[in-house]
Length: 385
Image 1: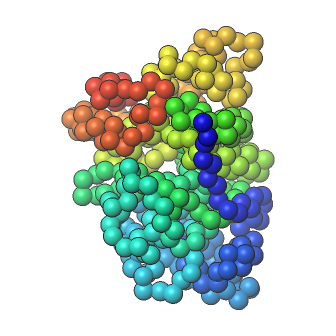
Image 2: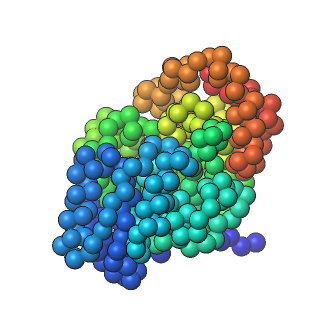
Image 3: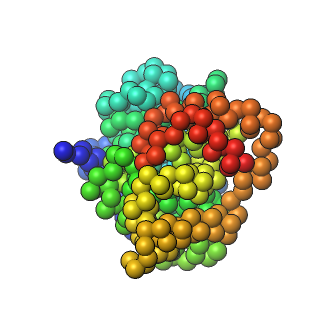
C-alpha cells in the first residue's frame, strides 16, 4: 500500500518569513499578484506592510479585502469577478483560514468559471488555478498547507467541503510574528481547531505513517503552548510553537483526513454562524469520548504526545486523562456550549436531524474510527447542548 503526500512546493518559516514574498514570487515567475484578505488585516496595517515590501521590489499588486468570516458562495463573487477582469498572474492570501479558503476558491473559479457547488466533494479538483501564496495570520486552520477549502452555500446553509490538488497553495510563508496581535478568543478557537486537526488525522481511518509523524509532532507543540498563548499573547516562544504546530497539523490532516468532529462541526457553523474553530472545540470532548472504544490505543498515543499521560500509564488511564484534559481546556479557554453561545434550544433540536444528515453527506464521519449512524449523530448533538 502506498500513500500520496501533497505539500506546498515552497514553505518559508520563522520570524519575518512573510517579508520573503518578492523572492517567492520571482521563483514562481510571477510579478502581478492580487492580495486577497479581509478588513481586519487592512486595519492592523498588515496589508500596507505587504504592499510596501512588494513595492520596494517593484512588484505591482492590487487588493481584494472583502472576504468574510466563514466565507459563502456570495461573499467570494466580487473577488472572482476581480480576477476575471484583471491581469493577475498569482494570488497572495493574507489572513486567517477564511481569507485563505476564500482565496483558494476565488483562484479556481476565477480561472475556470462555474459555481462553487460544482467543485464540492466528492469531486476531486485537480485543475490548477492561479498560483496561490498563503500567509497565515492565525495558528489554527492550517489552510496554508492543505488541499481543502470550505465555502458555505447560503441558499441552504450547507458548508461545502471542496477537495483537490487545485486548492493546495504553491507556497506558504509561516511567520509567527503576524499572530502576536490575535486576541485571546481567536487564539483559543483556532488553537483548539489545530489540536483537533492533529488528533483527528492521527485516529482517522486514512491515517498513514507520514501523517502520523506530523500529527504527533503537532500535538507535542500545541498542547503545552495553547494555554500560554491564550493567557500571554506576547509570549513569542508560545506563539512560534503554536504557529508551527498548526501548520504541521494542517499537513497531517491534508494527507490523512479529518473525521467526525469536523463532519458535525460544519453544519453547526452553517446554521448558527458559530466560528469553525469554536464549533470544533464544542464537539471535541464529546466526540472523543464516543470514539475512544474503537481506537483506544491511538487516543492513548494522543494523550502521551500532548503530555497529559505518561508512557507508564495504561491505555485506559491515558484515555481518562485525555478526556479530563479536553474538558479542562474548554473550561479554561471559556468554550461555550451551544446554549451558552446563545443558540435557541428549539431551533437547535429541530435542526439536529438535518445537521446529522449534512454531516453524513460530507464524508468526514466515515473517516472516524467509530463510524456513527445518523441517529447516533443526533444523540451526540443532543448531548452537546
